[in-house]
Length: 333
Image (cartoon, rainbow, N blue to C red; front, side, top):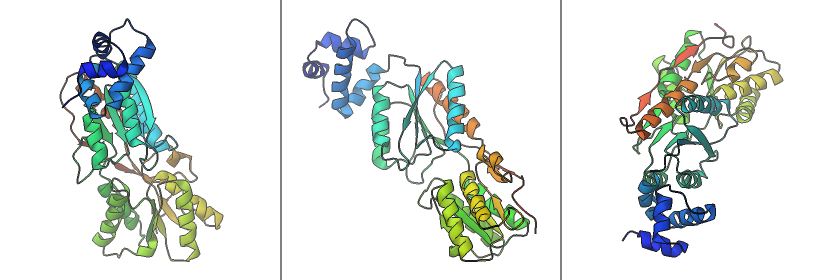
């Protein structure tokens, strides 16, 4: 059976009328009392989510955003887009970090639910079945950015990572490169890492080339692991002429590794990134890369979410276009 308002009141040590007023966003009680009642609601687990329909009457005008971290330019651009459009619509943004491996996702969801956010955006996060169930229990509209799952159903916006990687690799082949390394992706990441690897391998096969396991070096999409992976590759003295870096930050790591070994990009080795973050423009040479409309994805996501929060339409998934940006880091052989 569900928990009644009487039980909530008894556990919190207040009257039923006080619980009712708090649930309906009324005033006339202390902050301490409000926190105590909301704490009891939270303690009741799933029953808290049943009570959330009453709490939603208090229009918080706040969108919760969960991200793995703010240390990457990639996530920063998405959040910039979210905040811009949220502000224009009169909403504030509340950020919460899930951790790079999502270890704090459940805690972030609970916190945002307690803060009565009207909607939740989850960036670069692939939830487990249990975490998605927890999200659904909050009964708050949500949308994922740069995430999807073949097994779980949820609304998302992203690019086609497989096709993007296919096009990057095909471009490198068109420039005369056949010995192409793939560096810096988290190969256990089903959202971006694995699809980009598969796109890379499919493009090689389409051009009659063989994917060589020794030319695939995993990482975490970051600079340091890509740099170390590239150094390991260079020490093997394999005849690599080009590197497809799984992100722009990984691309910078690859360039740094080459420079440390006396190699020039693109004179001695070509490098192509993925994302077209500001990092790509800060590298020397400027990085050829695949453009993701990161700010636009953030803007469109929060606009769609706010519309649903205000009773307009429903949330649907969307694939955003991508395009190759040619700069200075790839040489034609």
